[in-house]
Length: 301
Figure (cartoon, rainbow, N blue to C red):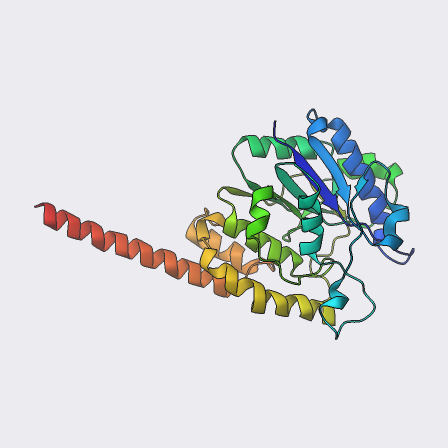
């Protein structure tokens, strides 16, 4: 049976933060999902954190060595928010597990009881990476005591990416640079790496597998941390990923042209310019194949 190592990055916050209520729910739903899964022995739960965050972590999670740096160490213009780098988190996990698949989810992402069973089913179907979009619930839940109601609430779909499963061997190919967690362009970086390097990735846009409390779609972007991630992605990550882009592997890539174009252009985590270049590349390939076929047929006469 395949094995999964799931890592999250808890952070100690005060009552003014949404994470103050979201994190206990995240912990509890992950533990319930593992207990519910028929392959629970093949699931390992990990955290990596800063020293000051250790006291809030559920004892059922294996705490990996503390993180030693943050985005503040790689960008002198940033202050106060000690946000970890996604490369450090995933490297910690890879160094401390023999699991075949690595799984990263954001700390505000809760999971359904059948979450891990669904992941194992996707793996058995031959997918080497899976990206799952969350459902959004109204901001009226704030306690693990309300989990039955959260499970029953279908909520609404969300266009962003915040749950990433991939074969451990793919991590060595990923280009993550100094992207930090908790800020936009984390999801952009991970999804573009996954759909660039995985052989048979799967995009799950609206299944009832994960959920987030809060109906927001786009978060505030007028801050230096957003600019850091955005600049890092476009200057250091995307230029190296572009040669590996393939339209058919990206979200919506197998849909008919009009539907594919609309969905790609409306998704805030994908970029229209990249889409148009991929469509141009595919059109050029098809035209070339058509002319080549004509040439071969003439030669065969």
